[in-house]
Amino acid sequence: MNPQVSISTALCLPFPDIEALIQGRTIAALPRMFLRPEHKFALYPSNILNIPLSVEQYYQSNFASIAQANLNKNNLKKIPIQGWAKCEQCQIIDDTTYLAALSQLTIWTPTALEKILQQQQHIFFAYLRVYKLPQPQEVAAKLNINDKVGKFVSLPLIITNSTPVLSDRTFAQRQQQLQNLKSPPHPELEALQSQLATLTHPAAKQLNDDIQVFLGWGSSNTMQSLDSDFAWIKTIAKVGNSSDGHKFEKLVRQALLKLGFTGSGLNPEETGGSGGMDLYCEYPYPLVGECKATKSEKVSDGTPAQLLKIGMNHLGKSQYEDSIKLIVAAGELNFYAQRTATENYMNVISPETLQKLVELQAKYKGSINLLELKQYFQQEPFGLADDKINDYIQKIDRDIKLRSHIIQVLKKHLELIQGEKEGVDGLYAAFVHSNPPQTIDSKQQMHEILIELSSPLTGYLGRDKGDTMNSDRFYFLRDLT
Image (cartoon, rainbow, N blue to C red; front, top):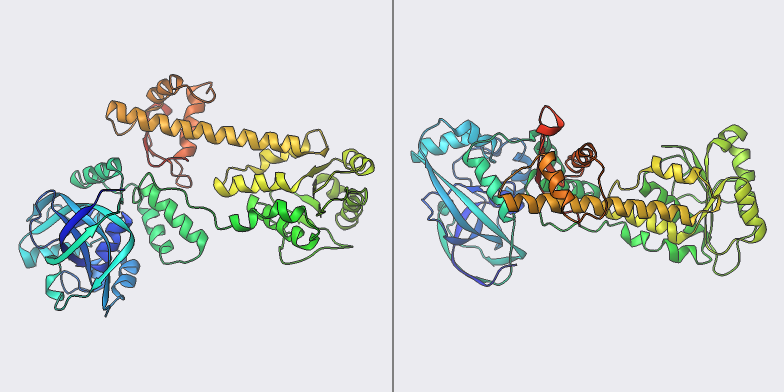
C-alpha cells in the first residue's frame, strides 16, 4: 500500500497493453516520446493500436486472444483507470538487430516492432513500474483521443491507495531479463496461460493465477485466494451432527472427491439407502464406506453391520476385503458397534476429522497424499480412527511448515548475499543455522524438497537446472503462507 500520489497526466496506450501491464505480463510500454525516469502518470486505455495492423499482426500469438477481448471494449462513455505507473528507464532503439529477441520477451510481434521503427525511425522503449488500484476509477472519455496513442493527456487524479503489481525483487529481475535479452524460460506455460485467461471456470482461474505467479507476472507477495469450496467444506461437521442423513451423505462424497478419490460411487447428487452402498471409491485404491449423521444418540451396531453386509453383497468377498473400510459417523459408538468395526478392520472417523482433512486439501492443493493416507487406514488401531488420522494431519502440517521455512530461508539468504540464485550447498548451510522447525538429514533430502517447491504445479521457487544436484540453482518466487 502506497501513500497518496498526485498525478496530472495519463499516458494513452492501447487497452491490451495496459491489461498486460496490470497483469504483470510485461513491464514495457511503447510511448511516442522519451520518458524521463521517475515520471509518474496514469494509464489511459484506447481502442486504437500504435500502427494500423490487425491484432494477429500486432500482438504475440499467446496474447492475441486476450488483446482482442480488450479491444472489444469500444464506445465507452466512461474510461476505467486501472492503475498508474512510474518510468524507471527509457531506451531509444533505432535498428532492427535486437527486435526479434525483444519481441520474445514482450507482447508485440517482430512485425509490429519493425513497422513502428520504420514509421518513427526509432522506438521509445520504456520500463514501467506499475501500481494497481483496488478498484478502477472511471473518468469521462476524452474526445479525439485516437491521435493521442503513445502520448500524454491531461488527467488530474489523486490516488490514495494502490499496490505494486510486482515486488521490488521481481521487477528488478524482469528488467534485467529485458536489458540482457534473456530468452523466456517457460514459453509453453505462457501459451497455456493465454488459453486459461479466457476461461471463467473457478479452477481455470486459479490455475491461471498460479501460472502467472510462477512466471513472475504476479507479485511474490500475492495472497493465496480462498478455495470457493470452503462454503460447503465448513458445513461437514455441522451437518454430520444433525439428523439430515441424506445431505451428510452427499457432503461426504463431495469431500472424498475433493481429496482426490474418484469412482462411480461418489456422485454427490445420488442418494444411497437400503440395498446400496453410501459411497465407493475405485481410484487410487478401492474404498467402501457408510455415513451416519446423528444429533445425540449413540451409533449402534447396525452401521458397521450394514457396511459389512452391503459391501460383501455388492463387491464380493475378495474385492470387499481388499478395500479400505471407512465409516464417517457423529456420536459415540456403542460397545457392539465398536467391536464389529474393530474386528472387521473398519476405520470410524468423525465429521470433524473429515472436515479437517478436506480443509487442509483446500488450503494447500495436493497436500493430502492419498497413498500415504492409505497406510494410516491400513494400520492399527481399527474401530475409532480419529487419533491416527489426526496424526497424519499433523504430519502434513509439519511438512508445510518446513517447506514454508525453507522458502523464507532462501528469500532472506538471497537478500543477505544480494544474489539472485543459490545452490543446494549454500542453502543447506543457511537452513542449518536458521532455527528450523525440524531437521533435514542430508543435502539430498533438501534438494528433493527444493525440486518439489520449484515444480510448475507449485511455483513457490524457480529453478535453473544444472547437470548435477550441486549445479542446480534456485530462486524465490512467492511465499507459502
